[in-house]
Amino acid sequence: MKNKSYQAINDSTCGWSHTTTEAPSYPRLEENKQADWVIVGAGFTGLAAAFRVAELNPDDSIILLDAEKAGNGASARNSGYIVDITLNDGGSSLADEQTQLAKSRLNMAGLELLRQQVNQYEIDCDWDESGKLHCAADARNIPKLKNFENFLGRAEVPYKIWQKKALSHRLGTDYYQYAVQTHKGVLVNPAGLVNGLLENLPASVSVYEHTPVSDVQSGDSIRMITPGGTVTAGRAIIAVNALMPKLGLKSDRVFPLTLTASLTRPLNEQEYQSIGKPEPWGVLSASSMGATVRLTNDRRILVRNTVEWWPSLKMDETSLAQRRQKNQMGLRKRFPGLTGLGIDYTWSGHVCISRNSKPVFEKIENNLYLAGCYNAGGVAMGSLFGKLIVDYASGLESEQLSYVLEQEKPVFIPPRPLLDVGLKTRLAWQRYQGRNEA
Ligand SMILES: Cc1cc2nc3c(=O)[nH]c(=O)nc-3n(C[C@H](O)[C@H](O)[C@H](O)COP(=O)(O)OP(=O)(O)OC[C@H]3O[C@@H](n4cnc5c(N)ncnc54)[C@H](O)[C@@H]3O)c2cc1C
Image 1 (tube, rainbow, N blue to C red):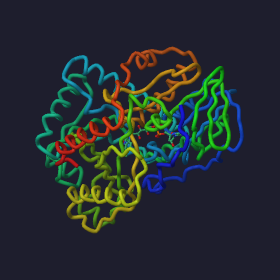
Image 2 (cartoon, protein in one colour; image 1 turned 90 degrees about the vertical axis):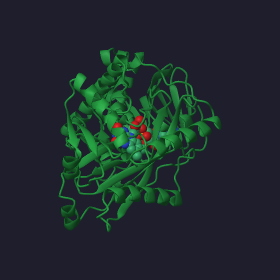
Image 3 (tube, protein in one colour; image 1 turned 120 degrees about the vertical axis):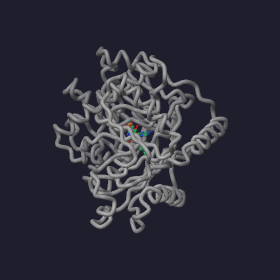
Image 4 (cartoon, rainbow, N blue to C red; image 1 turned 60 degrees about the horizontal axis):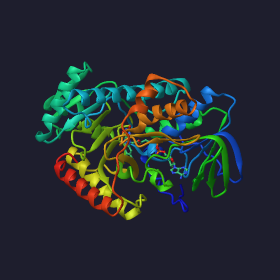
């Protein structure tokens, strides 16, 4: 497991971070340390793991390391949907439906963990219980939503159907034809949520940021090697999600994709009035390549409509500006009347994907555990997996843990350059299919 020269991939352009409470600051690791536990990665997974260790073992010392600014990975940069149930992984067989419902139960368990923490610590993250709308702009995608609707009906999951006229009124745009709303999901400012969790970490957790782990040495204890010092600990959790392959982990099973989002300035009163003063909303597309769009509590519009294979991960300024244009086009298509509405922030982030959409959750070696790869939906799932991986490392048992351990593992992916060709072709095809939803 080696990642000799870590290069920062997350800049400070994320709009959520600029429109919420400031992130706390932590030192770099500058000496050798010992702890009972070491956790690598301060996103939702690593944070949930830290909270869980402290809950189970109040006297244990915990060191939490992050390669960059703590919390500023995908956990701050996502679209802020804490999902209840997903659309795209449902199939038509009974077994597929059961799997989707089981996944929904896991998501709900993660959501409840977050809800409990938001309430307990009074975290200011624009927590909004209005659910999410799965929308089709292209009539060819309506049957997919109808299938989803039938599935929700059979599973007795509450939902609401939106026909075009009512939907236009609800959203303030007549871009969409049809929608299925599920009610239990929550919308947040994700940076506000992750910063709030960091702020409220138990006193037994010491955080070091800008401290990339370059090597993991295992034996009776685990040693994390970083540029400024080492951490030796009895047990270790690795929660680096899309960066697993960079650390030499699961590179034949998972790969990162890069997504780019933009957040506008707040709509002024006149603009807000011109779209009918809708309440905040969150739209997910019926197409996997379609746009995620939100109207936030502070009346900004978020558009995320690019998904790319970008092996270097870091997006330079010119490339980011090109993606901003694509986000802007998505905005104009939906709100042609808001001609003066400028974009304040554009940023990229990374999701971790496996070919069969399965997560990683396992013991890699004695006392060394790995959790991640949520296939683009890791706010709730990451929070649950962070807790469960600590339970697993602690020898606890539960129905939830058994279920997660029994799940199929990510299947083999070919090495580069075969992977490059395969991914580019597949993404291009999906982009073509979803061209009217982006
Ligand atoms: C644009 C975008 C939109 C998304 N929208 C949604 C959404 O609406 N809902 C949803 O549920 N999910 C969404 N996701 C996915 C979700 O953000 C992730 O699944 C989730 O944040 C994963 O959390 P994590 O803690 O596992 O990983 P991360 O948040 O990525 O945290 C991993 C941390 O590990 C650190 N790290 C990496 N390598 C090292 C190393 N070598 N040494 C030390 N530290 C290291 C990183 O700096 C990072 O802080 C989206 C993602 C993106 C990018």
